[in-house]
Amino acid sequence: MLLAADTSSQFAFDASKENLGMVVMGILVVVLWLAFRKMVELSEKKSKGQPPKK
Image 1 (cartoon, rainbow, N blue to C red):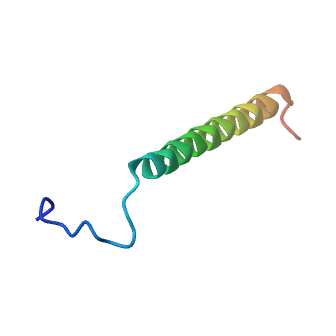
Image 2: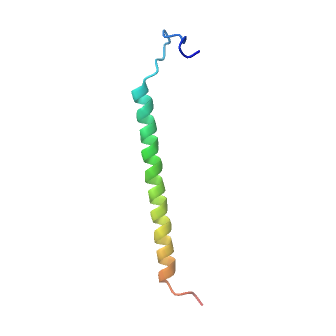
């Protein structure tokens, strides 16, 4: 059971470090997603602006 866990563990759980890692991963995913969307948007705009090749 979780309540009866051994508290003398050598590696203590630090909630602030665990949450900080999740926040950093969330920010990284959002930034990468926005960059990907911008890249797709720019490539579509570039392809629409050029006349078709003969």
